[in-house]
Length: 371
Image 1 (cartoon, helix red, strand yellow):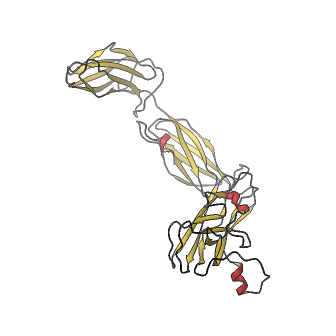
Image 2 (cartoon, rainbow, N blue to C red):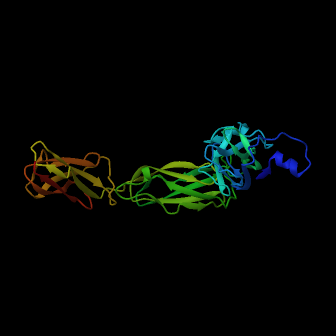
């Protein structure tokens, strides 16, 4: 909100004399244009303010020279730390909210953005006022013209303060639908019933919810509007994820995160792959065939199961098996070894010799080259 610095107020009306802020030379001047809205923000959360001023002086505003100075609530004592400094989050300094991002020529607008962080334990119902004025940073000299202020209020009980993931039917098997309930809670973690307006946004962490053989986990909808204080989300996945991180956020509220689980479905097939896929024709070289138990979606199925598999050459004369060609699968996998004896491509079949699967065979190939 705009206010007039005391120096200008004296020229406009009869008022009781008050101290004036230190003023810059007249070639510098700033006029208030607008600002972002006041905010409601909870302890531990952050919010961003933006103030817009017009450079209506004769000199350009340079970064690290011109900034939005923090002032007292009377609009004076600018550029020095105030009580609001405890709410600072990456300010330019404790007495300066922000500087210009680039040079601002006369006649252009400057946007000053800065973040606040409400300390834990700040009493509900507290309103904090952030006063400021544009000026020279090195000397804390305020330009003639307008100042401004914005306010942040910490909500009372009964007012939305945070998001709480209150329920989930995790774990699920891949291919099943997982449902998550998110509550709009107050400062006492009590449901704010009757909230039918808060829009909650959900996200899945790509580092823990993507990349599995079956596919990525996905949200049916990334946004849900609360109904009677509760929002609902649905997640599906064909990929298996033991620790998928689900998080929710909403403007001005503390967010929340929870781990959800998609487990592999029942064993359905075998997979086979060689490493390396191309092996040098060298008596000391070895290629390893990894045979893995997988579900219908292609996810590896760990665990101990009564399966035995056999590796048998289907075609080619470039490699020869080493050791046993029948192996028990342990922890969902079995490993076979082959040695190159020539050059070319060999194809191997893997056959299930004990246990039962819908797809009991697999095929893989290995190439051998010249030394």
